[in-house]
Every structure is written in C-alpha cells, then in structure tokens.
Length: 410
Image (cartoon, rainbow, N blue to C red; front, side, top):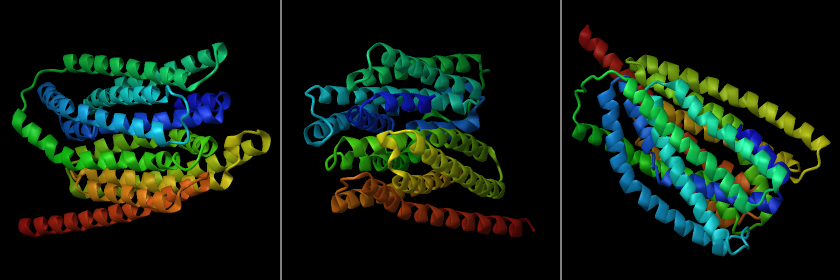
C-alpha cells in the first residue's frame, strides 16, 4: 500500500513538491530513529524469549518507557535544529512556512517512534496477526486519503504533511490498543529476573545499539540531505522516488528479517543458529537479486512507454539497486549477529558508514543523481566487509567453544 501511495504522489505532484516531501520524510525518519534510538529493536530482541510471560513483558515495557522518557526530548531537540539548518541552507525550500512543516514532520517521527515501541512489544509476544493488522490499516487509510486529496484539491507540501500525520497517529493508537488486548489475555506467571536486572540487560543491548541506530539513520538520509545543499528539485525528487520504490522489497525483507531473527533467537543450539543464519543470508540475497532483475526490467519497459521525469535515469537506478543490495546484506548480517545477543559491532560499522558518506559528499559535492547513488554505494562497502569479518570471527569462536565442550564431556 505504501508503494501505491508513492506512485499516486509521484504521478500527481510536481518535482519541486515531491522533492520537498522527500526531505520532509527524511526528517521524519531521523526523528523516528533518534527519538527511539534502537529501544524498540532492543525490546523486540530481548523480550522475545519471554513471549508468553505477562509479568516479564510488563517489566520490559516499564523499563522501556523509562528509557524513552530520556531519549525522546534529546532526539526531538536535535531534529528541530536540523530542520532550521535545512530551511536556511537547502536549495529545495523557498516558502516561509517550510520550517514549520519540517518541524511538523519531526513531530510525526516522534509519534512513529512510539508506534514502533508498542509494535515491538506486540511482536515479541508472538501475536503476529495483530501486529500485521496494526501495520496494514494505517497504510490503507493513507492511500484512501491521498486519492481523496488528488480528487478534491491536488497535492502540495502542506497537504502531504497532513496526509502523513493522520495515518501515523492512527497507527499509534492501534498499536497501543493491540498491545493492551494482548497483555490482558495472557496468563500471569512470575518472572525470575528483577526489574533492576532487566534494566541492566536492556542497557547493555541498548548502549551500542543507540549509537548505531543514530548513525544508520543518518547514513540512510545523509546523501539526500547533503545533496539538497548542492542541487535542486529534480535530482532530489528522482532520488526520493528511488527510495520510495524500493519500499516494496524493504518492507518484505524487513518483516522477513524480524521474523527470522526471532526464530534464531529462540534456538537453544548455537551451532544450529549459525547454520540457519547462513541459510537465511543466502536466501535473502537470492530474493533481492530476483527483485532487482524484475525492477530493472519494469523500469525499462515503463521508460519506453511513459514520459515522466522519474523514468529518465536507468543507469542511476541500476547503481542505486546495487548499493541497496549491499545495504540489505549488512542489515541481514546485523540481524543474525543480534540473534546471538551481539550488538557491539554496530557502533564501529555505522560510524564508518556515516563518516565516509559525509566525507564523500564534501569532496564530490553531488549536484546530480548519478553522484548521489555513487556516494551511497561506495560508503556502504567498508561496513559490509566489517560485518562479514565479525560474523566469521563469531562463527570460529562458537566452533572452538563447541569443540571444547565436547572434549570436556568426553
């Protein structure tokens, strides 16, 4: 449904409007990540093993809310500063109302982070049906609202902000209600871990995750935001279209990765977990390869029959898909490593990604779409190599530990 919504907006909005909307969505994504800082992912991973224990899940919720009260104000303040910088320096914004609209996108991002918080707890409880419904309903409502807006008034930046806000607020309410219904229906069972121990466990996982989430969100958006200082609407709009079109595989692989990471986390045997993790990595890459071939063929056919500015960048789209494939590989490797309770690799990997991306933007000063996708592709490579090295080291350590255990038993 998000893909359909994107097609409708691209078809009916001007390049300048879609460029401004794309930057607004980047602010939203940064706000969602910075005001969550990996808390939802931490709870989803750690609480999974207690998916049927009401007291333990309530304990994780209480600890999570306490951390959220510290994280949200800091993340929101940083985003307001970023919105001001974009308003004064970006080539995309010319209206005096742009700052307030960008600030509104930051608020939407904070609401989206709260939605992720409740969804993570809901998913960790094992109630996949409700989790899927909570995510699907706002997407359907968004498409309906966009169709109504196109029919009645047409699209502009301010209206697109409103059409983004309403489904996000709806998703927040639905996720909280679904969690409440789920937890109430669970049988009571006393947990063995104190709240202080739970808080310490969450912090151990959250501390490295926090920095990596902030850096990863920057890495996903820094090319677009950085390029907006050097180029104008059409290139930004084209890059934004690439990002939105890629949501099809992003959502699919995101759901698949979350599900597989949960299953891996539940496996008691480290050896089996490693083997299944390798199978998942290979399978996910084959899925992405098939998607890439279909996407390239579709783009080529559409460019031959439809005249639209977004269909004039076949080479750029190919480079973008290649770079995205590298990015998805790092995400999948990260999920497998997280299933082993590891998160220390995230800080260095994500910091290297953002640092290299920022340096390339300053050196190359991207003023066209080709330079933007080249920067994305080059900046992700060191992180991929690092994650592969960490996975190999972890596999060797587990093999050694397993061998020592067998020798001890013998």
